[in-house]
Amino acid sequence: QASTATIFSMLVRAVDLLALHLTTDQLVGLLVGFARFGDARAAGHLAVFSTLADQLCRQQEPIPAAAVATAIHCLARGNVLHERFVSATREVLPHVLPELESRQVSLIAHAYVRLGLAEDPALLLVWNRARQVMRDYEWPALAALVQAYTKSTFSDSGFSAAAVVRLVELLESGQVPSPANTACLVYALGRGQFGQVPDRVWEDLIVLCGKQAAKMHSTEFANVCVVVGDMHGATQVDDVVRGFFDGPAAQVLLNAATLKPADLVKIATGFAAARSDQGHIVVAAVRKTLLAHMGLMSPLFVSKVASALHRLKVADADVLSTLDQLRTLRRSKQ
Image 1 (cartoon, rainbow, N blue to C red):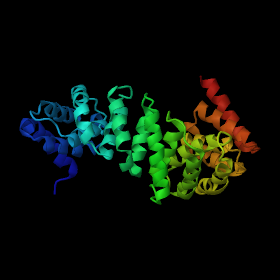
Image 2: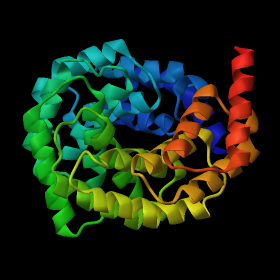
Image 3: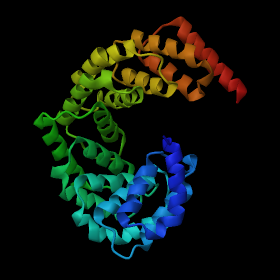
Image 4: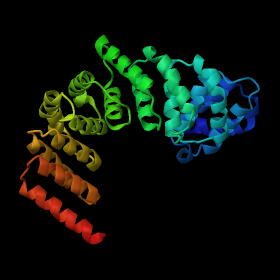
């Protein structure tokens, strides 16, 4: 049996020969297949993406709304900024947006931001359509939409208000998002330019994070920690914040294998911002990371971890001495 790589190698040659004769659905289907390989340049598929997108632009009939959303999403997954197709998308968006469902709107929004088009005026139309269909959003699409919105350069109070209403509805419905969706939403709402989020929503989200922390990937957990830590003193949910760090977050950190330095910085910063009493667990995690990744410690890592440990009032002489030696070593190499 032919391997997947062999099959796609044959498809590359077939695309060159047959692109002119393929239907819109066939062109989009091929984009979906090649997008699964991720970055097009790294996978050696850049020419294929270009050929397929070029041919979509040449289609005689208008491209259906769903095909527009899927195609630009696939280009974004392949990190291919195809100027001609993006230009064509701008032209058709006013006509196809009324036909797009909530998930398809999220695909377009996420694609534009990923392709570096966060300032594109076409996004104003996207946010407006998203607001119109907000009641149809479920957790995965809502998380992707809010993430894209907070990475764009536009501010739309109507969009933010509608998204908060839908978020409350989903929280009250009993539907439970995946840990990845929860982490995505919390990080986007906390670190992006979203607007005001009511304290009661933050309280529900932080409680949810506590329930799901053990099932999050380390980077997701780290992102949640840094956002929840920032909530301390800035909202009326300090008790919930402390409960998160002194309970489930501390347990996750205690059981964690070696963490990536970048993740540990966020986690330690979160614990410190919340004035957690679990400094001994943080320092234990720092010790494990120092042993495993000593050569990867940047000056920024050393500085931020040392600052977090100081705020946590940790007095572990060995760890503090190692961090000080690393700081001195990095300075001498600059």
